[in-house]
Image (cartoon, rainbow, N blue to C red):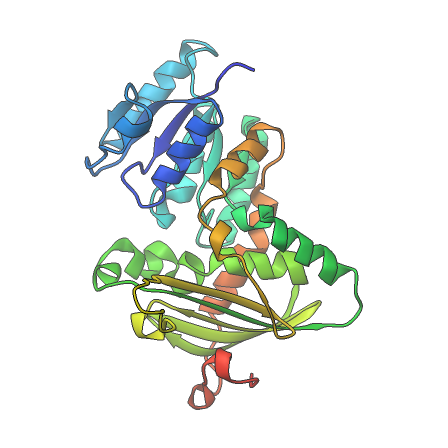
Length: 316
């Protein structure tokens, strides 16, 4: 199979190197990249000849010109690593230049934007894919099969703590309008995982709602789930002397720990292989977690005075 032409929006961002690696590892080529920030020396490690733009308008014009030069020149896939609130606009750009979109999480912040993208996808004939890499982790695939083969409900505790300094609140990630807040920006993968493994949501309550930590309870088809998200460094478990742990991910099912941290950041190449091979996760795959994160953001906090860390209590 001939290599595909890729372009990438948001190449100066945190997650972009995983996409650059995946494009190269799958035998494809990056022909153009764009970011308003020009600290993009990372490109030299992967694609030395990629054209670079700091203005999305000029990037758009370049992709449109390439489209008119024929299949060998046009961009076949546009990878989107831009800030969350720009994702749907950049997906529309991909569809407009006849390219498939591979968009980082969340595909959109608000669920009603999914309907418009679905209509545009049908009209364009191109596809919209999103990155739900945890669905490809073998131990989580096995857990899903195990859960769906038994009748009894599970008791689940999900905890994710990742430290963030003062910069986080100042950046677009600290703005709920631009990032969707913690439930959407750092929780979306985990809410997708919970829905994918344990089924649809019948009850949702929020026990804590602060800029840097959230907690709540979900009643799912096959599980009761207590969850906790935090960017406070003091919430990290104490690491052994000489070690540094910038993040803590824990998923327990009926008291048994399910280990998935080692594969969390290493699955983008598998996502690209899946997409290029004719699979991939699309708009309807993304919908449940986008709707759930929005529901959590708009749910009134209940009994905040009774809040306790979910790792130390069985309460709801």
